[in-house]
Length: 271
Image (cartoon, rainbow, N blue to C red):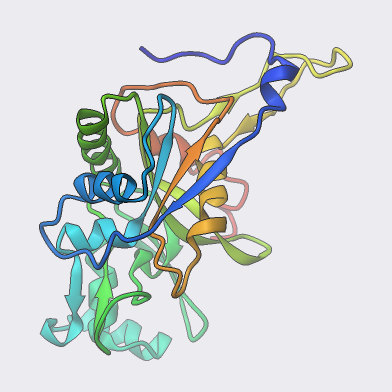
Protein backbone atom coordinates (compact mmCIF):
# COMPACT_ATOMS: atom_id res chain seq x y z
CA UNK A 1 0.00 0.00 0.00
CA UNK A 2 1.31 3.47 -0.89
CA UNK A 3 1.18 5.87 2.02
CA UNK A 4 0.59 9.59 1.57
CA UNK A 5 2.29 12.40 3.46
CA UNK A 6 0.47 13.18 6.74
CA UNK A 7 -1.45 16.45 6.76
CA UNK A 8 0.73 17.80 9.57
CA UNK A 9 4.43 17.04 10.01
CA UNK A 10 5.28 16.81 13.69
CA UNK A 11 8.25 18.84 14.92
CA UNK A 12 9.22 15.96 17.19
CA UNK A 13 9.62 13.70 14.16
CA UNK A 14 11.62 16.25 12.15
CA UNK A 15 14.26 16.71 14.88
CA UNK A 16 15.00 13.01 15.24
CA UNK A 17 18.64 11.99 14.78
CA UNK A 18 19.62 10.32 11.50
CA UNK A 19 22.42 7.74 11.24
CA UNK A 20 24.46 6.87 8.15
CA UNK A 21 26.50 3.69 8.58
CA UNK A 22 29.04 2.65 5.97
CA UNK A 23 29.48 -1.06 5.22
CA UNK A 24 33.01 -2.26 4.53
CA UNK A 25 34.43 -5.74 3.80
CA UNK A 26 32.13 -6.41 0.87
CA UNK A 27 35.12 -7.14 -1.34
CA UNK A 28 35.42 -6.94 -5.10
CA UNK A 29 32.13 -7.88 -6.73
CA UNK A 30 32.18 -10.30 -9.68
CA UNK A 31 29.58 -11.10 -12.36
CA UNK A 32 26.88 -13.32 -10.92
CA UNK A 33 27.44 -12.30 -7.29
CA UNK A 34 24.32 -11.84 -5.17
CA UNK A 35 24.59 -8.24 -3.97
CA UNK A 36 21.90 -8.64 -1.31
CA UNK A 37 23.65 -11.66 0.14
CA UNK A 38 27.00 -9.84 0.12
CA UNK A 39 25.49 -6.86 1.95
CA UNK A 40 23.87 -9.06 4.56
CA UNK A 41 27.14 -10.94 5.12
CA UNK A 42 29.10 -7.69 5.50
CA UNK A 43 26.59 -6.35 8.01
CA UNK A 44 26.73 -9.58 9.99
CA UNK A 45 30.54 -9.56 10.04
CA UNK A 46 30.43 -5.99 11.34
CA UNK A 47 27.94 -7.01 14.07
CA UNK A 48 25.31 -4.76 12.50
CA UNK A 49 21.72 -5.87 12.41
CA UNK A 50 19.00 -4.33 10.29
CA UNK A 51 15.92 -2.64 11.77
CA UNK A 52 12.55 -1.90 10.20
CA UNK A 53 12.74 1.26 8.12
CA UNK A 54 16.45 1.05 7.27
CA UNK A 55 17.27 2.38 3.80
CA UNK A 56 20.20 0.58 2.18
CA UNK A 57 21.98 2.76 -0.37
CA UNK A 58 24.03 0.73 -2.86
CA UNK A 59 26.63 2.06 -5.26
CA UNK A 60 25.61 1.56 -8.87
CA UNK A 61 29.07 0.25 -9.66
CA UNK A 62 28.80 -2.95 -7.61
CA UNK A 63 25.34 -3.59 -9.04
CA UNK A 64 26.68 -3.18 -12.58
CA UNK A 65 29.60 -5.49 -11.84
CA UNK A 66 27.32 -8.16 -10.39
CA UNK A 67 25.07 -7.91 -13.45
CA UNK A 68 28.01 -8.40 -15.83
CA UNK A 69 27.99 -4.87 -17.22
CA UNK A 70 31.73 -4.28 -17.17
CA UNK A 71 32.96 -3.97 -20.74
CA UNK A 72 36.44 -4.03 -22.28
CA UNK A 73 36.00 -1.63 -25.18
CA UNK A 74 38.74 -3.42 -27.16
CA UNK A 75 35.98 -5.95 -27.95
CA UNK A 76 33.71 -3.29 -29.52
CA UNK A 77 33.53 -2.47 -33.22
CA UNK A 78 32.38 1.15 -33.59
CA UNK A 79 29.68 2.16 -36.05
CA UNK A 80 29.91 5.03 -38.50
CA UNK A 81 27.85 7.19 -36.15
CA UNK A 82 30.21 6.44 -33.28
CA UNK A 83 33.21 7.36 -35.42
CA UNK A 84 31.60 10.67 -36.39
CA UNK A 85 30.86 11.52 -32.78
CA UNK A 86 34.38 10.44 -31.85
CA UNK A 87 35.78 13.08 -34.19
CA UNK A 88 33.54 15.72 -32.57
CA UNK A 89 34.27 14.78 -28.97
CA UNK A 90 37.82 13.43 -29.09
CA UNK A 91 36.63 10.26 -27.34
CA UNK A 92 37.64 6.76 -28.37
CA UNK A 93 35.13 5.62 -31.00
CA UNK A 94 34.75 2.30 -29.18
CA UNK A 95 33.75 4.13 -25.99
CA UNK A 96 31.29 6.25 -27.96
CA UNK A 97 29.72 3.09 -29.37
CA UNK A 98 29.31 1.74 -25.82
CA UNK A 99 27.62 5.02 -24.81
CA UNK A 100 25.29 4.83 -27.81
CA UNK A 101 24.11 1.37 -26.73
CA UNK A 102 22.20 3.03 -23.86
CA UNK A 103 21.30 6.27 -25.66
CA UNK A 104 17.96 7.41 -27.02
CA UNK A 105 19.06 10.88 -28.13
CA UNK A 106 22.35 12.82 -28.29
CA UNK A 107 21.87 16.30 -26.83
CA UNK A 108 25.40 17.67 -26.99
CA UNK A 109 28.58 16.39 -28.59
CA UNK A 110 31.76 18.45 -28.54
CA UNK A 111 35.21 18.54 -27.00
CA UNK A 112 33.81 19.35 -23.56
CA UNK A 113 31.02 16.82 -23.15
CA UNK A 114 28.87 14.12 -24.67
CA UNK A 115 25.46 14.62 -23.08
CA UNK A 116 22.68 12.21 -23.94
CA UNK A 117 19.19 11.20 -23.01
CA UNK A 118 19.34 7.57 -21.96
CA UNK A 119 16.73 5.05 -23.06
CA UNK A 120 15.21 5.26 -19.57
CA UNK A 121 14.72 9.05 -19.96
CA UNK A 122 17.62 10.18 -17.76
CA UNK A 123 19.77 13.00 -19.11
CA UNK A 124 23.44 12.62 -18.21
CA UNK A 125 27.01 12.69 -19.46
CA UNK A 126 28.20 9.61 -21.41
CA UNK A 127 24.93 7.74 -20.68
CA UNK A 128 26.33 7.01 -17.22
CA UNK A 129 29.19 4.93 -18.68
CA UNK A 130 32.43 5.45 -16.75
CA UNK A 131 35.61 3.70 -15.68
CA UNK A 132 35.97 4.68 -12.02
CA UNK A 133 36.71 1.61 -9.91
CA UNK A 134 36.83 -0.59 -13.01
CA UNK A 135 39.96 -2.63 -13.63
CA UNK A 136 41.95 -2.30 -16.87
CA UNK A 137 42.91 0.62 -19.09
CA UNK A 138 40.06 -0.09 -21.51
CA UNK A 139 37.55 -1.26 -18.92
CA UNK A 140 34.27 0.62 -18.44
CA UNK A 141 30.94 -0.06 -16.74
CA UNK A 142 27.41 0.56 -18.01
CA UNK A 143 24.52 1.39 -15.71
CA UNK A 144 22.15 -1.42 -14.72
CA UNK A 145 19.61 -2.13 -17.44
CA UNK A 146 16.74 -1.56 -14.97
CA UNK A 147 17.95 -0.06 -11.71
CA UNK A 148 14.51 -0.28 -10.08
CA UNK A 149 14.46 -4.03 -10.71
CA UNK A 150 18.00 -4.31 -9.34
CA UNK A 151 16.94 -2.44 -6.18
CA UNK A 152 13.89 -4.67 -5.85
CA UNK A 153 15.98 -7.88 -6.05
CA UNK A 154 18.46 -6.62 -3.45
CA UNK A 155 15.66 -5.56 -1.15
CA UNK A 156 13.84 -8.91 -1.49
CA UNK A 157 16.99 -10.82 -0.55
CA UNK A 158 17.80 -8.55 2.39
CA UNK A 159 14.26 -8.70 3.74
CA UNK A 160 14.23 -12.50 3.43
CA UNK A 161 17.55 -12.81 5.27
CA UNK A 162 16.87 -10.20 7.95
CA UNK A 163 13.13 -10.53 8.49
CA UNK A 164 12.90 -6.72 8.43
CA UNK A 165 10.95 -4.24 6.31
CA UNK A 166 13.61 -2.36 4.35
CA UNK A 167 14.07 -0.02 1.41
CA UNK A 168 16.87 0.01 -1.16
CA UNK A 169 18.28 2.81 -3.31
CA UNK A 170 20.77 2.26 -6.13
CA UNK A 171 22.82 5.47 -6.35
CA UNK A 172 25.08 7.04 -8.95
CA UNK A 173 27.00 10.32 -9.24
CA UNK A 174 25.65 13.09 -11.48
CA UNK A 175 26.41 16.69 -12.34
CA UNK A 176 23.76 19.40 -11.81
CA UNK A 177 22.82 22.33 -14.07
CA UNK A 178 24.55 25.58 -13.05
CA UNK A 179 26.16 24.03 -9.95
CA UNK A 180 29.78 23.05 -9.39
CA UNK A 181 30.46 19.50 -8.23
CA UNK A 182 28.66 16.19 -8.49
CA UNK A 183 26.27 14.58 -6.01
CA UNK A 184 24.68 11.16 -5.63
CA UNK A 185 21.29 10.65 -7.22
CA UNK A 186 18.89 7.74 -6.81
CA UNK A 187 18.68 5.84 -10.11
CA UNK A 188 16.90 2.79 -8.65
CA UNK A 189 14.35 2.73 -5.84
CA UNK A 190 12.45 -0.03 -4.05
CA UNK A 191 10.36 0.05 -0.91
CA UNK A 192 9.99 3.80 -0.31
CA UNK A 193 8.15 6.69 -1.89
CA UNK A 194 10.92 8.72 -3.59
CA UNK A 195 9.03 12.03 -3.40
CA UNK A 196 7.60 13.84 -0.38
CA UNK A 197 4.78 16.08 -1.53
CA UNK A 198 4.17 19.04 0.81
CA UNK A 199 1.82 20.83 -1.57
CA UNK A 200 -1.37 21.85 0.21
CA UNK A 201 0.21 21.66 3.66
CA UNK A 202 0.88 24.72 5.80
CA UNK A 203 4.18 26.18 6.93
CA UNK A 204 4.80 27.42 10.50
CA UNK A 205 2.98 30.70 9.74
CA UNK A 206 -0.05 29.11 8.13
CA UNK A 207 0.99 29.78 4.52
CA UNK A 208 -0.23 27.01 2.23
CA UNK A 209 2.72 25.45 0.40
CA UNK A 210 2.36 25.33 -3.37
CA UNK A 211 5.68 24.05 -4.78
CA UNK A 212 7.38 21.97 -2.09
CA UNK A 213 7.96 18.65 -3.84
CA UNK A 214 11.03 17.11 -2.19
CA UNK A 215 13.20 14.47 -3.90
CA UNK A 216 13.67 12.39 -0.76
CA UNK A 217 15.40 9.46 -2.49
CA UNK A 218 18.04 11.80 -3.95
CA UNK A 219 18.56 13.40 -0.54
CA UNK A 220 19.11 9.99 1.04
CA UNK A 221 21.54 8.98 -1.72
CA UNK A 222 23.52 12.20 -1.20
CA UNK A 223 23.64 11.66 2.57
CA UNK A 224 24.96 8.13 2.08
CA UNK A 225 27.78 9.39 -0.15
CA UNK A 226 29.21 11.29 2.82
CA UNK A 227 30.44 7.97 4.20
CA UNK A 228 30.71 5.97 0.96
CA UNK A 229 33.05 8.34 -0.88
CA UNK A 230 34.21 8.13 -4.49
CA UNK A 231 37.80 6.86 -4.50
CA UNK A 232 39.72 4.38 -2.35
CA UNK A 233 37.27 4.30 0.57
CA UNK A 234 35.96 0.84 -0.46
CA UNK A 235 32.57 1.51 1.12
CA UNK A 236 30.04 0.74 -1.63
CA UNK A 237 27.02 0.45 0.69
CA UNK A 238 25.56 2.57 3.47
CA UNK A 239 22.63 2.06 5.84
CA UNK A 240 20.55 5.19 6.46
CA UNK A 241 18.65 4.75 9.72
CA UNK A 242 16.02 6.85 11.46
CA UNK A 243 14.58 8.57 8.39
CA UNK A 244 11.49 10.38 9.68
CA UNK A 245 9.83 10.98 6.31
CA UNK A 246 10.01 7.43 4.96
CA UNK A 247 6.76 6.24 3.43
CA UNK A 248 6.66 2.72 2.07
CA UNK A 249 5.75 2.08 -1.55
CA UNK A 250 5.50 -1.33 -3.17
CA UNK A 251 4.90 -0.52 -6.84
CA UNK A 252 7.53 -0.89 -9.56
CA UNK A 253 9.27 1.84 -11.53
CA UNK A 254 9.55 4.25 -8.61
CA UNK A 255 12.63 6.06 -9.93
CA UNK A 256 10.56 7.35 -12.86
CA UNK A 257 8.91 9.75 -10.40
CA UNK A 258 12.25 11.54 -10.13
CA UNK A 259 12.50 12.26 -13.86
CA UNK A 260 10.72 15.33 -15.20
CA UNK A 261 8.81 15.11 -18.42
CA UNK A 262 9.95 17.47 -21.17
CA UNK A 263 6.99 19.82 -20.70
CA UNK A 264 7.83 20.40 -17.02
CA UNK A 265 11.60 20.69 -17.42
CA UNK A 266 12.66 24.35 -17.07
CA UNK A 267 15.74 23.73 -19.21
CA UNK A 268 14.28 21.72 -22.09
CA UNK A 269 14.40 24.67 -24.50
CA UNK A 270 18.13 25.00 -23.85
CA UNK A 271 18.88 21.40 -24.81
